[in-house]
Image (cartoon, rainbow, N blue to C red):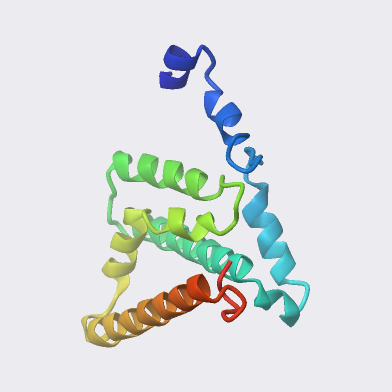
Length: 156
């Protein structure tokens, strides 16, 4: 509605994307194509954007499964959580550049709540340590890749 009011068309964002390196809305095909490329063999895992998109797709799938299971185990989630989740998943699946899929999927808060609900208290320390280590390793890869683009295999 805002695009329609300000630009005269409800699809103004599609026109604006053409000015961003000729990107365009691909109707949820980029993440699926990226995941399909990962199934072609081990050499596909050298492209960082496809690997990160694959991780995002696994996170989204597991998150939906855990949320669905919470519903069947008697924990009623507010309708707003489901609406936010569906909108966030659609947003995460919509970018033209596949390297954005993981970034968009990390804001799907109901997934984190559902994972935390199923997490055993004894797993909390090791999980936080593992996530902190992975975050640090990813930061090192991104910083090395930014300084030396050909030095890091995961840099998109």
